[in-house]
Length: 191
View (cartoon, rainbow, N blue to C red):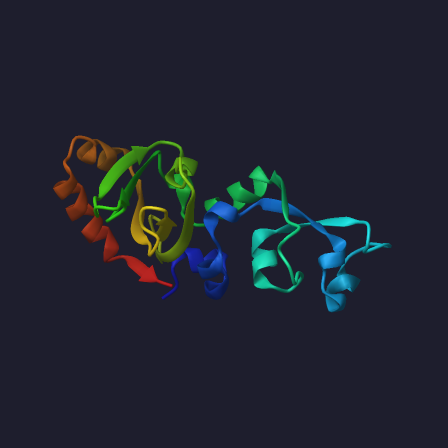
């Protein structure tokens, strides 16, 4: 059985993509492009021109052999929206529950409710996020997040909530939320 994420992405591809780096482009000196790949670019002078590449392409190692000349250029919001919109069936829900387990240096867990789907992925610190599982219908998404407090990573679950589910859960404590999430975890298909 395929998960919702697998309907939209190749399993091997989506497992490697850091959600926080989707749509982020860097200006790279064309001279850093490997000789075998230069035919893919419409460039006359590789010694003096630049190209724009995303982080996944750079990390994949298909184009560059050195990283010393990377400089951030721009972020493509349309690409970001397109990518995250294909992770869940976000149009069905007006509210989302985000639960992070063991997400601090002292292994604290917590949750938040958000109305804007993009806010499920927003953090006010430097973080890497990778998809590890998804439900079949696109209601639930499992991520692994890495950051300075938990460099080995921790689990994050995002669940789309119907209005009635939101009203049932909005005043609950963490134990009640955790029980709800454990039921949702039974529907998650690991990638």
